[in-house]
Length: 455
Image (cartoon, rainbow, N blue to C red; front, side, top):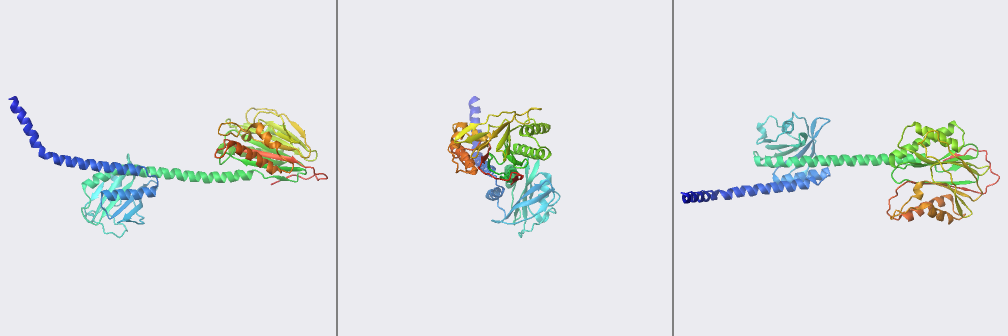
């Protein structure tokens, strides 16, 4: 009995053998199709440019299914309509501006019902709407493109032959449609990001130009004074600023500020400070220490707790060649006299931190040939690849090499060049760099009764 059972088992296996080639053939065909779909989906998912993506989609679909006309329609949420964004007639891309609602045509039906619509003969389907591409269509296959349940668009394949599309085509394109929907959505998001970046760059360019125009180039009608400024932001917008202000007859106010942080927020806060300083100058006549006290209170009133400003503020009296200074946490100003560099030690709390802060003052009686430098900390803290700072010693070395023939503009450019050389080529600056340089000249018999003219 056991032997008979064993023989029977072998006979059954033997009878099943003729079926195996057919199963293997179908399995191999299925594996080939799945492999092809995988390769197509992987290639499409790597393309982010929408125009290139649409061309590749058409090529890949053409390799799977024969058609005469192929189009891609995307769903517009605002207009609630399907809009053709790409069309291929035989082998040529054609302009096609079809726009249909969910209740129109076979494409609308496929999109509305979220399922594939395959029509063997469009003449027999009342839903069919002819497109203006000049091809006499007989059969059509429409595949909705869905991202989860959200409609992205449809693929529309049209043929001049009836019964051109099969259930196998339907299954393949339905599978591929999921990957195409993801690829199209990725391309849309990429284009959205790219457009936002372009808009942001344009806005930043405009903002940088506005910021540049807020900063003066110089001042006239200040007898016996040469003046220059330099400003190099680390980013598109900087948090450093400087300003020149008429402060009475023959008197000029000079401000150099450094807002905590960088970028757009710091630039806006610096612009607020510039506007506030100019407003205070118009309303009041006060010394530098009083100016910093008033500005400190005004900035505290804005309640921007995360921001503060380090500022050096001075008033130059041309008639007496006297520079009166007050400091709110900025680097010490430097005095270059006879080849020697002296640091004017003057300290203070940055603006916008503590209410009721009082600031000290110091006056310098200057001589012809004296040079005074206001520098933001971006100058001193410029780093090289080893994170070694430029520092006050290197700055003093640059200043000590200056000759009386060098203009104040030359001095500013030499300091910036020194920091560039120290940082090395290709090293991105970490902070804004701002300088104000003034030199006293031997100008006698001048008219000190004029107000400075800022330009």
